[in-house]
Image 1: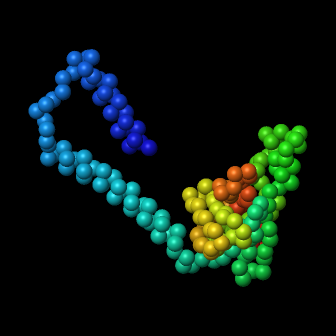
Image 2 (image 1 turned 30 degrees about the horizontal axis):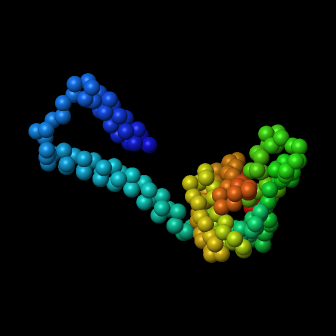
Length: 202
């Protein structure tokens, strides 16, 4: 973003400051400059390399499933998700909470602005222990769904296939899950990081 503002700002300033109406005359003597070509080639390459290093580290960390403490299977259905804590004999469905569901109906007479976390709250939020490496197995039962948590910077689509990703929560943090593949109703679930006492909380 900063690079784009700098480049376009400089370009616009040059067009305004050195326009013909202000008496500017083009320099016809400079038709080639090896030094200039090296500069405008090397600088973008260095910027890309600097950006690639942290990006590569993040991608490697996302795919590193070693030392995961919990595996959760998320199955997408139309209008809801099913979560299964694998090996823990815990399974439940998560869908839009009653207040948001009533407010979104046509002619409900309810102002959505009066509903806390409208289209974000659910009846059964997914809860993970704090500071725990969690492996998410993502799949779907019917149409294309996307398990997307914007705060985690990830988005996975799974048309009937099983995919995996890793998450790690912080204590007391709520992360809303957005369903971008559906037009009528986007947010659908919530991921909450709670304490580790007493095992896996719901």
